[in-house]
Image (cartoon, rainbow, N blue to C red; front, top):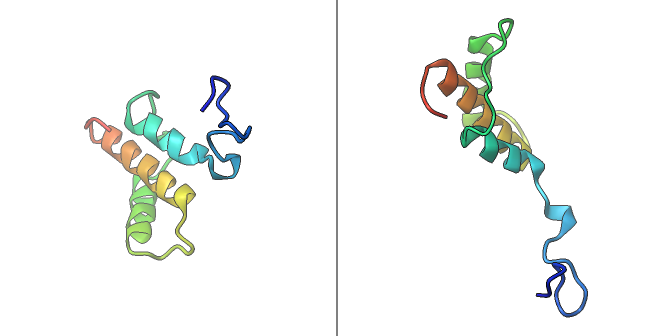
Length: 85
């Protein structure tokens, strides 16, 4: 690896096709980097139902974006409960 982030053949150290901003965002939300709360018009029950359906495997295909969205939803629910996300 060279200082410019490329290997000796000039190939980047990461594959841009595999960058996953949804997972990065979920990490930040869970880490408390954002002060997020449920919106006043957001139904807690709908959010809980979404998490329940995802856990039950009702969404297909399961991908990193769905998993990240579930993590963010859980963090929102935890925050609403007064827990640390």
